[in-house]
Structure formats: C-alpha cells, structure tokens
Length: 171
Picture 1 (spheres, rainbow, N blue to C red):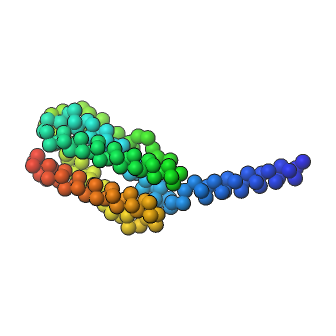
Picture 2 (picture 1 turned 90 degrees about the vertical axis):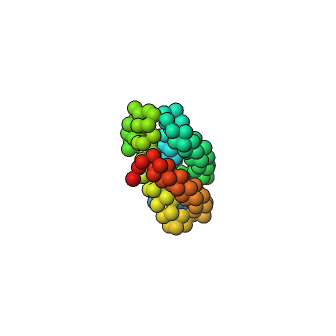
Picture 3 (picture 1 turned 45 degrees about the vertical axis):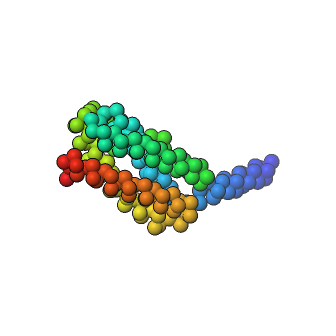
C-alpha cells in the first residue's frame, strides 16, 4: 500500500513540475513587466474616463478619450497574451496609481486639467522607457511584438501630452 502511495506522490510531483514548466516560459522579469503594464493600462483607462468627465479643456478630454481607446485595446491584447502565456494579470491599478486616481477624482475644471496633464506627462515618460527596455531585453517574440507596439503607442501619447503640458503652462 505504501508503495502505491509513494508512486502516486511521485506521479503527482511530476505532473506538478510539468504544469509549472507549461505555466509560463517567460522569465520572472517578463512576467513582472506584464503585471506592471497591466496595472498601468488599467490606470490609464480609468483616468482617461475621468478626464472625459472632469476636464475643462476640450484637448484634455480628447486626450482622455484617446487613453481609453488606445490603452483599452492594449489591455485586451495584453490579457490575450497573458492567457496564452499562462500569466495571471492583476485586475486593478496598483496602490500608487489608486492614490493618484483618488487625488484627481477630487478635482475638476482647470485644476483637474493641470494635475492630470502633469501626471500623464510624467507617466508617459516612464512608459516610453519601460517599453523601450522590454522590447530590447525580452527573448519572447510575442512579448517583444507587444512591447514594440506599445512603445509606438506611448511614444505618440508622450508627444501629445508633452505638447498639451506646454500649452497649459506646465514645465
């Protein structure tokens, strides 16, 4: 009887190891990148929706709509990729993003415009750096393709938000 138990335990352990090997062929850094990116995309969509409601300047509202449209699509693409790679993604923004979201949620009009644009300018600068790095370091071709497309998107966003930041009196 104990021999059967030992064989069953060994078989279960082998299946468990096989499952881990199939679960994700990505490096820990790639999985961490996907998690961080998911947090950011969720945040961008939520803040973009807020911008469409709380902004005074039509250009800020339009930028918010662009965030919802572009980053919403990116998030769907990332979720599909994560599913293929067996990577669990978060379903909400991280603590720092939530704190910023709550802060912006208390503002409206020109006060909102100023703070939202300032936040987005800083955030997109970081996003461009993150995407640029990931598309160079990942060995996974699917993730490289995603990061490259994301780099193109956030680079365009960065140009737009930097211009908007300058015209609204940012530094």
